Length: 164
Image (cartoon, one colour):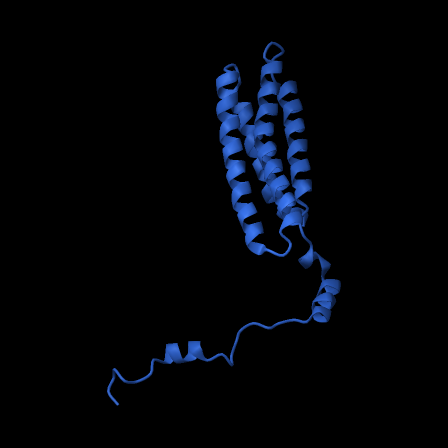
C-alpha cells in the first residue's frame, strides 16, 4: 500500500460515531441536577436588567444634580437622564420584541431567531436615532454626564451575571 492509499487516522477517528463526547440526560436526571445545584440553572430575568438600568439612570441623575454648581445643575441632571434614556429605552424595545415573538413562535425556532435579529436591528437603530435626535434638538446638552450615564446603563448587562 502506497502512502496515498493509506487511510488518514484523523478522518477515520472523526467518522467513528461510537465515541461521542457528550451524554444525553433524561428529564428525571436533569430535574435531579436542578435540585442539587439550582444556581447553575438559574436564568436572568431581563426585565430586572431594564429596572436596574432605570435605577442607575435615576441615581446618576441625582448625583450629577448634587455635585454640580447651582446654575448648571438642571442641564447636568437633564443630560444624565437623557443618557440613561438612550441606554434603557432601546433595550426595553428589544425585550418587547422578544416577548412578542415568544408568544407567536413557540413551534418555529426560525421565527424566534428572526425576532432576535430584527430586535437587535431595532435596538441599534433606536440608539442611533436617539443620539442624533437629542444632539440636534438639544444643543445645550452636556456630553460628559450623558455618556457616563449611558455607559453605566450598559454595565448593567455585566452586573446581571453576578446577580445570577
